[in-house]
Length: 286
View 1 (tube, helix red, strand yellow):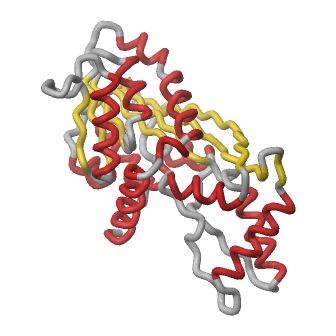
View 2 (cartoon, one colour):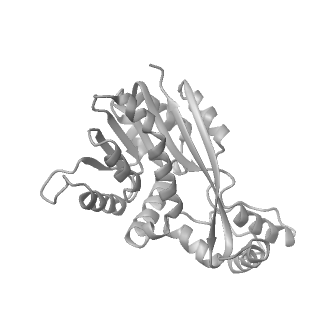
View 3 (spheres, one colour):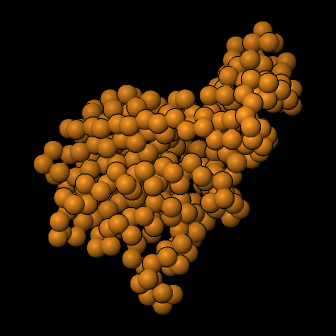
């Protein structure tokens, strides 16, 4: 567990220091979609000063939207990577009129593993919990959802975006073709993604009364497979979370995958890549 967390922290620290925002086109779309989906919730908040928790703030793409749309809210943002938090703080100091260098930020940033933090946080602390393109990294999603349910006040809402199982379909099919051509059982490369239905089931088991889900397919074009993999790596993910099988080394595996990908999935830009974007909202009974 600790090794997994260290690897995730290292990846996202590297991404924040390099070019995360340049390559995070899809994550930005997801943040905009998530922010827009909360419009009704904002109207229902009325004159109260809601307490918001953001899990996995990254470089602050969603944080900036929350601050713009919920100017009176008390916002707490968590991230596991120090460099991501630093980037988010810089973004907020630049964008928020009240966040001059000598003033207190309107957002409270905390370096934390969200899963461990949620297990120890004070119950009934938040009216709204949000997360953008982060929940696919949860090591124990079912347990974590139960903790988040405990943190929400009556009538509170958990809203998050994540990636669905159709994400990187072309990559997985290209890898599988190489394995089969060598008479080997295909292995999955990269993170496994839950479907909207699987998330719905886990949310219901966690005690949420109402669950809404939305799924959309987005296709991005890249000049080459190499550029696509570089972009994925620049946002903290990886396409190599599997062991190279006996008799098929990494160089041979990836060379074959490159050929299959370019042959099967050409696009005007070069090659195409599919992203399945999931948006889920789950409410606590009033």
